Length: 116
Image (cartoon, rainbow, N blue to C red; front, side, top):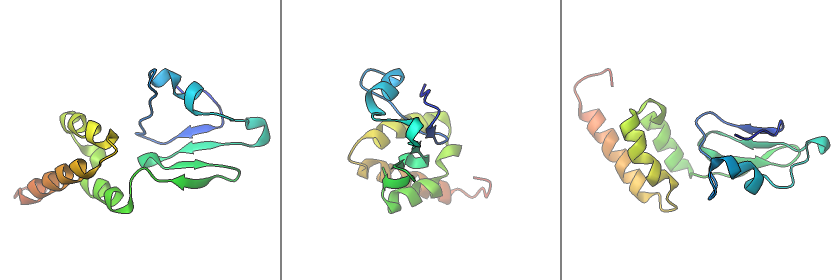
């Protein structure tokens, strides 16, 4: 839905706006001037980068939660699990998601099947 040629959004990145995802660019990508070399990169795990040259400004998740997401292989989760996880990941208090993910990993690791 983002149409600016100098805005790059990473794989599996979720973006939205109060007025819906179609309004994301209009309401959130401000002062974007490609003619001056501006670029906006929204990377995996919602790392926000900006400037010229681009530099990471802020990570959505801290290192521990990013490591937990990688260990979880969240991209391989079934749709039902992703549907369960998404509201927790969008909540400013990420402790519930961390508990849920650790519990899921513990259950997965307790399975005798090595093809998890």
